[in-house]
Length: 413
Ligand SMILES: Cc1cc2nc3c(=O)[nH]c(=O)nc-3n(C[C@H](O)[C@H](O)[C@H](O)COP(=O)(O)OP(=O)(O)OC[C@H]3O[C@@H](n4cnc5c(N)ncnc54)[C@H](O)[C@@H]3O)c2cc1C
Image 1: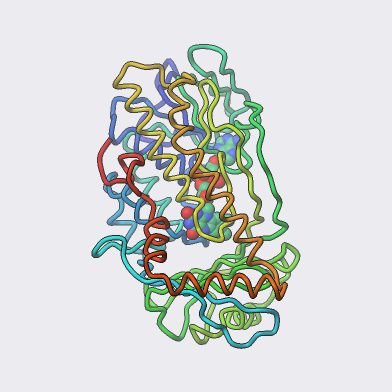
Image 2 (image 1 turned 180 degrees about the vertical axis):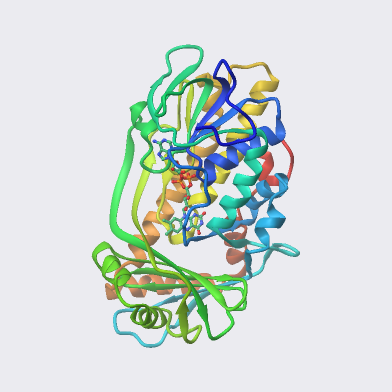
């Protein structure tokens, strides 16, 4: 089924076929045709390109929101977003009643620019679906059944009977990527046996644009500000407790939430049912092979403890779109390994560092061993008294440091 203003061309040939119409795949498609409208880009998804019923709100760093500014869709997304002006970190053991504050961050990356915004997932998808309808062919209910990468173009056989060709295929089909398996790319996997619970709450006290991260023995519990007296919650439990909590009556869920947050926002009410996401680390050993590039969660799914998953995926978009557009301008074959390895070199280290950081933080903070707690609290306390280190951490969390892809520096490609 074709679901866009741009119809599938008669010869079914495209420059780029993106498989996966999640936020990473849609942002790549929108970016490519925004900066190079003559490119023929198709996005195939097994779903229907509808705004999903997803309760998450995502923390997007200042660096990556520049991509949406460049595409002209940030102002609309921002209407339902909330800036994060301050962050407070607490640590507590089983049975603790008080929540000692160990670390606080405050500040802006540059005057008037907070280091991150909380944006509802639905709002991100709505903005992207509107933008891609202009210049991209969207193929709905199209899963890839077979991929042949041996010729000058990749050939994809899709469910629904379509067969399309493209110089380059991009796998943006999520952490259980079928294309990654078809290309026999191995992964590094660690099952956390934890699940992420997500909901939106209304609360009595104002959050003052503060993000709270409460480290508890069961795992981290984050409360992230939304417009008004509302916050997005994302917290970690072992997978059995997660299911049990999801099935509790709303009042008991609210009581659990208030207690986990140390009552810092007063009484809470749930605005929507809790959703549960199983968590695992999954990093592809290669991001590219001839005629195929992996991006987003298909290349790297990390623990949400620092809210970096889509931020990494959007940095992939900035790097890959620049590599593709530069290669087209130079008359190069965009599916060649030589070109694609420029993208891989750009992204590999950043992804490896973030995967290690999120994995270690989760292990360090998801336990109640007294000695480990004493050491981590000492570490957090020391950082809290070092304003220059905190400034550097904020700049890093915001992304877009020097030397990266142009879009992250606020420049056009
Ligand atoms: C609880 C939780 C909280 C999070 N919080 C944050 C946060 O605060 N900040 C942040 O940056 N990130 C966060 N993340 C991570 C973020 O949600 C993901 O990194 C992001 O959604 C990945 O986007 P994607 O487009 O790569 O993949 P997905 O969103 O998984 O999209 C994949 C798409 O591919 C399609 N697809 C799958 N298989 C096929 C197939 N075989 N054929 C065709 N189509 C297919 C699917 O239908 C889907 O549309 C969080 C994650 C969780 C679980």
